[in-house]
Amino acid sequence: MMFVSLGIGTAVAVALIVVVSLLTGGRSSANALVGTKADTFTLPTLAGGSVTAPYATGHPTVLVFMASYCAPCREELPHLITYLHDHSTGKVRVIGIDTSDQHASAIAFVHHDAVPFPVVFDPNSTVAASFQFQAIPDTVFVNAQGRVANVVIGKISPAEFASDLAAINA
Image (tube, rainbow, N blue to C red; front, top):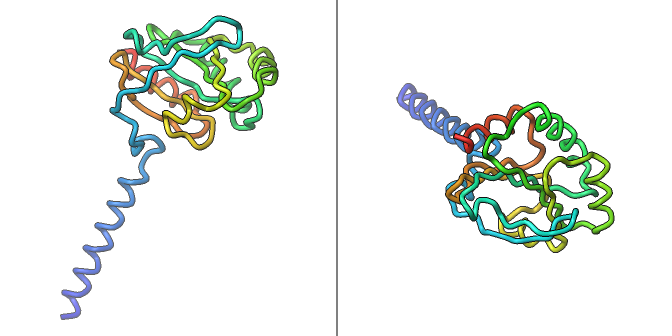
């Protein structure tokens, strides 16, 4: 009887380990937005003019959510800029979304780092809310069909960026 109890206990423990591993195996794989249709937007850019979500017209897109007050964003952005200077994005368009920020602070932030991609201004977090974000930085990879291919919550490494960029650039 003791061996049966040990066997059942071991089986339950292994099952729990497998379930926990599957649920926590990747930062972005469990995101409920993956596979859903991304909401489109048109927002003013910090440089003047406006941008409509490129995926609305069939262009794969990376959305980089950031703000001047966000310390992790200030850490992440230089690495992302270096990556973009050294690598081609192919047909993928990269759009920054400065969210819940002051206009002057957002402009200074983007100019300080010489951000090489358009940055739109979303002072009321309308777009961030449509992606259900509670904090930034976040990065969303949207394929040419307008479906969310991946979401990275928090700072993204250049290796993660390259991998997810390649996936929507195919």
